[in-house]
Amino acid sequence: MSQRVPTGIPELDDVIEGGLPRAGLFLVAGTPGSGKTAFSAKFLYEGIIKGDRGIYVSFAEGREAFFSETARNGLDFAKADDAGMFLYMDLLTVKNEGIPAVTQSIVDAVLDFKASRLVIDSFSAMAQAVPQLIEARSILHTILGKVIRQAECTTLLISEVPMGTSRLGLGIEEFVADGVLKFTQKEIDGRVIRNLVIHKLRGTKIGRREHMFTLDGGFRMLSPFDSSQTNNEHSHPLIKNTASHSSTGIKSLDSVLGGGLRRGSHILLEVGEDVSSPSLMSFLSPIISNTVKSGDQVICVPVNGMYPEELQEFLRKSIPDGLASVQIFDITGKGGPNTVDLGGATVLQPFDMFWKTARKLRKPENRLLSIIGFDALEAKYAKDLPAMQGLIIETIAKVRNAGDIMISIARPFSNTLRELASASDVHLRLVQYDGVLCLLGVKPRTDYYGVSLPHKGASAEIELVQVS
Image (tube, rainbow, N blue to C red; front, side):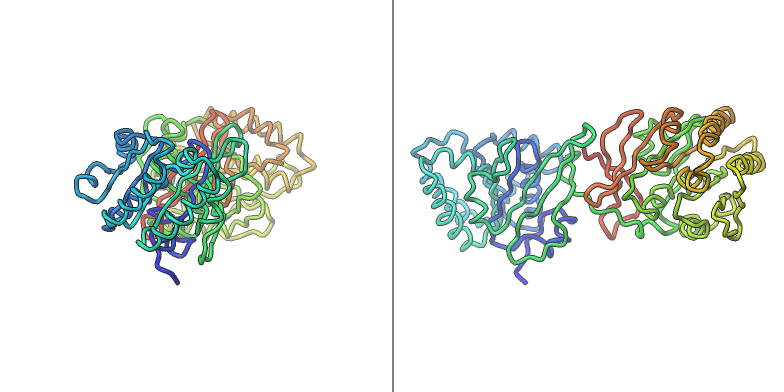
């Protein structure tokens, strides 16, 4: 395997055998504002941290603007410049006749500075000063390609993709480059989502080609959600409740919700069809754990397709000493241990049993959190749908009056979704996009958030990362 140069994005390095092949030329293409500069700056700074000198050649942005923008994301290029580890070449004023000389000056700078990493921003601007396309190809292939490879300098070549086109730059860069990374922006539900697509990477086995990333606080890529990393008793430290809100156990989610789950409220969690039960339970686990650790009680009706004993086993790993505070209902008819049978000939019986249990569990000084998989109730009592819709409104009213909290879970195809949505104080949507678990607020409207775990080896505490 060829030597690898870490990009500074561990989630990307994991799927490209540890980094970019050393001394290669890589095209970084995308529309304006898609994250090309942020990625390239992160790449250079990673090298500086590891002792590699880096050069940033700019035909589009002044030195001070670059230093200021990157400093906002924690990249201190000014300090690196003072330490002799970084060189910024400002070529904003290049004239047409100066391109061959400028190209040679870049090569000379790489050799004299002994640079291991180089970014040219952008080749599109540089090539505009060249009268013929064949001359641009010659510069790219002969001078930049061969000479910089001989200097073993790993190079990122930024190229602008015009809006509304699929062509990468001038159409010649991708054939000369050793790899092509394309940065895209898509609008979903009125929110802009950014993706990095690995089009090609010579000599590399690519684990996954499309990756969601965010520019919030700097360039950060999100990995597919791995529910197995959340299943341990140390995953969910207690977050104290306030006088008006119960914490979700996820600090960033509390912030999105304005302090957590407001007491006396109904929250609808609409779960996409491609979100698995383990992923859903990993998201709900901190909420249940924090509720139990705060001394409150929890009632759960498992979602369709999940047996009570599966839910018990899942919760046993996150709250091993708190299962006594969680009452799980069984509507499958299997009659699992330590569960309450919620079966019945009509839908009236499970709702009646629900309230009998709620009255038994509720204490004056504590609150009750109910998590109800309405997709499971719907599947069992499909013929009683009109009655169920009326019971939903009645149940939500009782929860509000008691000052409790109710989380309803429904799928997009659920017949009860409209009633649950109209009666909700908060409507959240949990979906999967490019393998990444995402959360967005429908009511109130929020940005897209990636449901993320820190990179492996770190704490397994869930966090929300803004991606739109």
